[in-house]
Length: 614
Ligand code: OXD
Ligand code: MN
Image 1 (tube, rainbow, N blue to C red):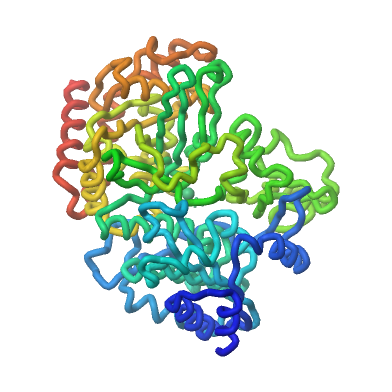
Image 2 (cartoon, protein in one colour; image 1 turned 180 degrees about the horizontal axis):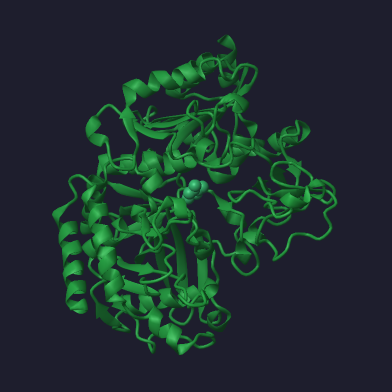
């Protein structure tokens, strides 16, 4: 292992704990070579990846890659949170004893990087100087160069982030070994993959995938699971799958910040990157901070809840991203952005990319087009003609700074004060356009009962929600009751508490199925109302599930909407809500040690709905 030592010496990596960790895993995985990388190496690594055929050019200054066809998404079943304490078992965290999981992973990883380079990626999931920096430093070891390219875009990468730590042993150890993708039995009974966060040892061991959420360990495994666990055990912060945006009122100069959670396929990235509607653009500017993760803590300076996006880039779902749904995302992956596309359709001749929903119809000239599996679209049998060109979970990866409306202070180590926390799941009825809660317990209760309609019939009963507390269901790392109590504690510690709200852009007419609300940029109008409510400029109407706007209070100039649709959007269907309350009861009963305050909030809402139905 003299070789590893000389590589670390040459790289100037001093931290003895990092050196020991690298040595240990280089030996165990049997990697042929070790290479320490930093953001400055990106251009060279891109060249090497192009030469090796791992990526292709997608126009000027953008790239395309394909993952193995059985390795295209996160696997929730194979994802585990392990600790030494059975009390850490929750409903959603898939808890297993650390003493069982660690040997299992070591066995799978042993010798599995033979013939490959092990890249050492020192990273920071925070802007430098952040009060949460101690929880943010990590070192990912990976045997995939494509993972390095993604990490360079998604997080801050460089040795300086681990060489000057106050406690040199405080970095997260994040080990990624791809494994032999063609022989892992993905999705079968004999599935070899394991994605484990050993949360009480701050060690992440992922084996058997080189795809996104399974392999970019700074993002979900560290940024959500590990950070949520650290935030809980330290009592200091929350790590949530939340977007974060700012709204500046140019007339008053005030800037508001809103963060919030949305289950997948509920439009979180589109909302995060939204622009003001044309009719309001003179007065309001919307700025982007983050589309996926927010860490929240109480600032000792002003006592307010502060929010920060720990990421450096966005790993967005490509499908349905277009000029109408998300023009800023399109700009952020344009020529020269160094964006990476994964599993979209690719034209080998023109180097263009395409995905379902990019344009209404796929390109007419099929010449050169490959689908996400790499098969020429022109060669398809007629019976396969309707098959998607891109994988539904195909992605773009780009740095935050490429987003044209990125906030000027997105790298402020102190984050930004949070005015509102919103939740929203795709629901076709019952949920009004927006309902606001000024009581934090009711807000936390609302987050815990967040859900979205099951996307496939097999996943749930029609009209019933798949609950996804705070949109953290796949990322929960400790028990839900403790999670609720931790939320209440952090909120209890804040001065000038954020207002909570539940939004829904997806109500449909039950007869003809049209969306009642125009959506997209117009969604900002609901958020502007929320800010006016917080400022005491409007009062809305109190209902059992929060305050909803009156028609007059929602500024609707320039919005094309039928009066009867607006009526439905701004009303509460107490009968449907009563059904929902029964489902909620069942959902909450699963959680051990749920704080009494949450149960009380639930019973208050249920009793008020009963009273309305009569
Ligand atoms: C996710 C992601 O899987 O952000 O939620 O990639
Ligand atoms: Mn996400």
